Every structure is written in C-alpha cells, then in structure tokens.
Length: 263
Image (cartoon, rainbow, N blue to C red; front, side, top):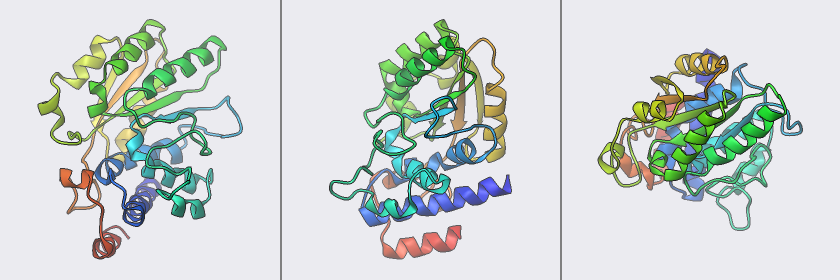
C-alpha cells in the first residue's frame, strides 16, 4: 500500500500543476478522488488494456475531475506525460472534461449523470457475452442529484449486473454549497433502495478502497455501490474542505508550497 500512497502524492502534485498552468478549475474535486483512482489503476485488482476490449473498464462520470484521470493515464503509459502540457490549450483533446479521443477514455463525460447509464449498457453487453471482466464508474455525490443516475441504478439491479461497480466520491460539497443542504436523503439508503449491494468506506484510505473493490468483485447477484467518504482538496492542508478551491486555481507561490507539502 505504500506504493499506492506514493502514487497518490505524485498524482496530486500533477493535478495542482495542471490547474495552475491551465488556470483551470475543479481542483478540490479532482484531489478528493485521487486515492480511489490510485487503487483502480495501480493495484493488482483490475486489468486495463486500451487495445483489448475484453478487460476491465473505467468510466469517470464526474468528468470535472479530468486532471486526476489524465495524471493516472500518463503514469500508466496510456498517454505521454509530455502531452499533459496540452491540457486546457486551444484545439487540444485534453479538455477540462475527458473525451474518448484520448487513449484510455471509453466515454466522453462532463455533463453529469450520464456515466452510469453508459456503464450499464457496456456491462449488460459483456454479461450477455459471458465475459468475466468488471466495469467501474466513478460518480460525485452532487452528481447523484441527477434523475438519470437513478434510472440507471434501477436498470442495473433489474438486470443483476453483478459485474458493475459504482464508486461515489462523497466529498460533501457541490459547486456552490454542502451537498446535503442542496439535495436531501441518505446516500446509502438510496442505493440500497434501488437494489444494490452497499459498502461505505473512507475513500482517502487506499487500504479501505482496495478491500472494498476486492469484495465487490465477488458479488454474484447485484451491482455494488461503494460510498467513498472523502475530503475535497485532500492532501493539501490549506485546501482541505474549503469549497473556494472548486473554482480557484493555485498561483506560483502556492505551487511551491504544495511541492513542499507533497514531495
């Protein structure tokens, strides 16, 4: 797990650098899901191969965390690390939300509430073909306000998509306020009501994320939702749980401070 913790730190610094250089927002919500992505891409639980459509697949439904995904794809070797400098530039495919022109991205996302539906379609097709791979979708807690999420959730349980895992990055914030103040209800109970197996963990603890995905892979009847309690801006003390970093970007002085904190 020490390896995953080191990878998370490297991803976090890359995310901050990309935000600084491109003057792009969504830094806090990109940092909250880094530990989840580290386990997904760099543990031994899943197998990704951009040239083989038969292996496990990942969909970043909360597309505004694109910088965290790009950092993972670069470390994984799916894209060149040199290409990261193109992030946020005119005419670049590395936009503020991922698109499927990028190696390792199978679904363009950004408009919230669509990733799980896409994941259901892909997963059902593979289940019919009796493939043994697993598909993972990462959503934000605010994204779960979207009705389309629950249409997909009901569909997945009706088709017994036990090969589908949804991870909810529950950082307690939406763009302009606390998630629970904007939309009510208990997240765990909602997924349970729609027929899913439920787990609730600390999403910034790679050990817990690892164990949760490992357990979810063994499901035989139902899709699994893993509620990942996280902290927005995790890893950078002066950003943690501060929603100003949803739209604010770090300046040069702050990037130096972040480097000292992380590395």
